[in-house]
Amino acid sequence: MAEKLWAGRFEEKTNKDVELFTSSLKEDYRLIQADICASKVHLHELRRVDLVTSKEEKAISDCLDQLLSEYKTGTFVLKADLEDVHMNIEAYLIDKLGDIGKKIHTGRSRNDQVVTAFKLTVLGRVEKITQYLVELENTLIDLAVKNLHVIVPGYTHLQKAQPILLSHYFLAYFDMFYRDIEKIVFFKNYLMELPLGAGALAGNPFKMNRQLMSQELGFRRPTSNSLDSISDRDYALDTIYACSLIMQHFSRLSEDMILWSSEEFGFITISDAYTTGSSIMPQKKNPDVSELTRGKTGRVFGDLLNLFTTIKGLPMGYNRDLQEDKHAVFDALGTVEQTLKVNIGMLQNLKINEDSMARNVNSGYLLATDLADYLVLKGVPFREAHKIVGQVVLDCVRKEKHLVDLAYNELQNYSSEFMKDVMPYLDVMHSVNNRDSYGGTATKCVKEQIKLAKKRIKEVANNA
Ligand code: ARG
Image (cartoon, rainbow, N blue to C red):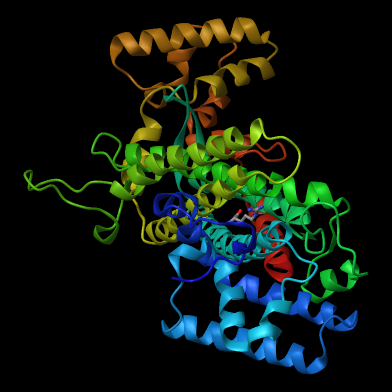
């Protein structure tokens, strides 16, 4: 059993259950690489202020490299009784280098050490998520480009409302996920403030240059208050909030995919590779990816509430409760990464059933607003026009007729303002192209938005 690095003040050994209860290894093993990077920068600064010699710096740095390669090949095994990955690394250095190894923790506390490695690790994961988001956005743009000729019913209250381009629908999701990318870019500002050098809470007394350390580790700047540096977990909450929004957006897309792939809608067919069967009903092909995406959304929201609740009553400073941050953040990050990967694949293999969409867009009364708008252009006040078309619809419902089946002279029974030139208003493509306000569903507007979307994603990809 390894000796505790803080054993000096203690007369009794730690209770075994306490060791298990207080260990953070199950989560913080993920910080190993980041901790080694940050330790090297810390070490370099110790050298600059003459607290270690160049020879000692080299010995410790080489030993850290050796540890990492042993970890990667599985020969370095983390010891459970050493509480966390940070103590394990230090114990390894002491084991290999004796007194030289005992110098690494000079001017550093685990309080600033842990948050530094945590921020670095989260940054890497968030960058990976951004790359996935870019791939997702490109997939949505592809779907928009390929389906410019397809019209689908647009819904409000899940009742048919007005016809829209299928491309317009996919671009709606593009915008939602684009906001997620923008939020991640913004939140990264805080992730990139370096807490190292804050010490346990009050700063360090060795004239260590935190600006230099920040530059060397690729951060934007050092944190400006040592006390806040070690007690702050806002960046962890920001991360889970960004994950929650991504999941929220996926959950709504999933709901559409589940409905649209049902026999009743039949708008899409999800490929076999992205569906599963039933153990009893041979005919079943279930949209489990979408269902689980919807399900896992609750889990990520739970992570957010979990960490909010953990932090809410803590007094200023470091409190051990904060160790619980990693479980919530890594659970959210892991879930989002998996969700992105599998949903991108599903969307790339989606089959669009144009016939079914066309049938559905011509049934129902999606052109009712267009008829009212026609009357408005003839000088009928909108509320009056709304009433007249309402009566047309009511009669169609009674006679089981569609609006597109009406002839213009039938319409004249409801208003003498209906002329032959009303006929284009009974065409869904006319309806779509008529809505040509900026951001509307008209083909020319959607083409404009596709261009803009491509430009935005290119910029993100270049800056990522
Ligand atoms: N394993 C702990 C964590 O991850 C380290 C805590 C160190 N600080 C302390 N004052 N005990 O948060």
